[in-house]
Length: 352
Image (cartoon, rainbow, N blue to C red; front, side, top):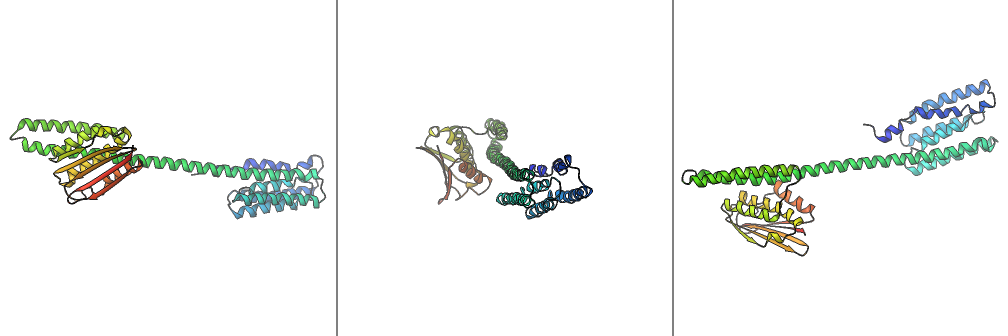
């Protein structure tokens, strides 16, 4: 795939229009056959070098620019616009990197043209415009090349930003879906097991559990849709109530300290998703009988503590725990996990 620099560099044919200045002196002085022959040989030698230069980079451009300058000096004694070849040499050397080397090369070409004109005793007006155009062309080419390179860098940066944004969005969807599907399926499984046990001895309660399963499935479907559109996330108080209900359904006694309503909304949204995943892990992996959940909103900081009395370090390193860390880190917070005897303590804090 061509870059903007490549497309600009490959514009070759239009620049050859400036060769019209080579026979320009013939407008007021009829050339001899030898002059015409020398002009044809010079142009015939110049054209392959000119086209080859478009495929070269680095020090090879110095060689081609030097060859163009040599052609210019060789025909300087003739009644020709000999500085034209030197101007092409300045345009070629202007693409050399680093830019300091290109500018020094341009200056060198301008000096050679000026010295050649003086040594041959030509009128200043005969070669001075060529010197001026050598300098202007070289500097302009250096500036244009630098501009194109900066544009390339900017486009590459924009592409990298788009790529990173896409990666971040995929990671967000993965985290949210993991939390939503994990909580919903865990709750559905618990209530389904309870319904199976109750269906014979307490049909009314079993029916209520089946209705709760249907409600949980519909709620989970709505949360999946919200996760895909980036609108997932309720208040910490709402999530706390849902977590308590899930713990009770699993037969785990919830113990709550603090008021989730005192946590600011921005910190609460982050801690709500952390609480969801933490409680889901307690239900699925801890084998706990009790689970303590603590909320604290201090000056400039909000904290969530989830502690169970089950298997130590029940929060296994996986998508869930990784998702917690990523959310908290992105919000400037931190996550601490510690094994107790027995049980596990998870502490999450975010700036409020």
